[in-house]
Length: 368
Image (tube, rainbow, N blue to C red):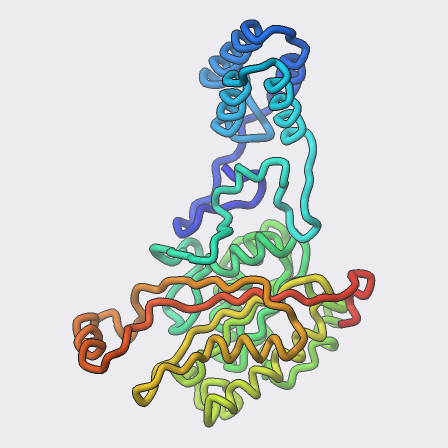
């Protein structure tokens, strides 16, 4: 179980609720008064038996987490070391320590097994729970915004997605208790996203609005003012991968840009506008892949990365995420393998999640 809002990667299932009220913390404190290791091991074993039989319950942690920590106490070679582990366990159950950017309790960091910290993400399948759907061609998997919001925001904070599409970021934000605003150029797609979001439970009564507008020209300060806000705490961007998928016939659509350079120029317009409303010392996430055309691999991801760097942000991480099959290749796997052997190239199986940091003083929040 994860202490607060966790959901295991990929399966869409919520964690089981913790045990009902109990006296575990008091019993752990009592263990610290024991002055011999044999007696301490005996009392630890008794507490473990009661935990396993539900004779004692824990309202603040997962039983397996607690049992593992008690095993560590019992395995200590000295009483001093055992008391150290007990003090640490008591602190993890009674105190909350975060980094100020999220709700992760660092005193219980071992419990957050669903949060990824490596730079290679091998995700077997997309989360299709609730209203999530892969019907909208080109939308990213919900696990990406889920992970980013868990790492870089707290409940009640504001997240901006200037390429909302079918509303994946907003649906995840609603589940996690984050306020979200999404910008979508295509009115039909925007309306579809609104229907999906409306069908998703909203127990925290958070804002999850899709605005039909051009991300390149929208006045984000004016938009936020409508919600009584001056800034956001996270930006998640999943733009078109240039013209790999044509999302509309609208000439303003980035997928209709005349060239890679034109695409990057317009992407830069969006970046400069959203960075202006991003709080200092907060994060921007860019999800994008590369392109293959005319026998040449075009490093679109790294060129887009450079656009964000030129806007003054600092690169914090590059995550490589797998994708096994795209809609276009799903029924043509053998054909694409033949083409790769013939043409001397490799079939795309990855995309990038770039994580950027906006330097500055937190006292200047809301002023870009």
